[in-house]
Length: 249
Image (cartoon, rainbow, N blue to C red; front, side):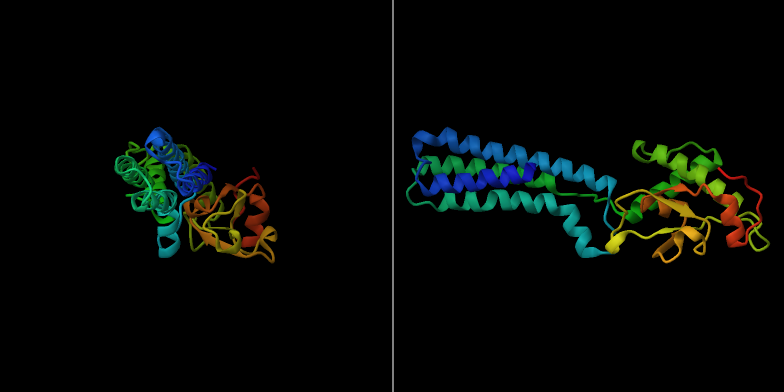
């Protein structure tokens, strides 16, 4: 919404410019309009960055990764460059007004664009790596130096679920259990499911029948929004061929 307002402000500014409203007497109007565009563009950039931290793109998908993480800078340029260009090239505008408005517009465009650039963009891969490191420290009782506030609570849940999965997946080949679970894949190739899902002990359990299934560690399941271990552990142990030593949650 903030970006829409910023672009709407630009369109309004272009309309006023075409009507020769930006003469010397209306310099405060054009400056105010440019400042307003910058405020809404920056607000949109900050909100978008926050959303990306919660739902990052995959670095392996280079085009989407770049576009998703740098979208704020792209939108900001769209919201500023046409208007600033028209101001600087307008032949009817008072030279003093053109110089001041053009300079202010260019400076605000640079400032707002910088806030939209992700210099260290988040990724699913980095999230998984950080979560694994944090969960490993929690499980081993080490100081949680790898745990940022954003991942600490979830890492604790991952450590608990990983231990439960290991206890439930013991067999002759894996006496200590495994850290491999199965869950419904996100729709349409998305990096993360829109709705939370349950993860299971193997791909052959009843809830996953005729479903597109992903597999991986508990951490990887959480990264795709499969954030709860099945409550039917005893049933799934039997279906998957594991020793039924864990009671149903």
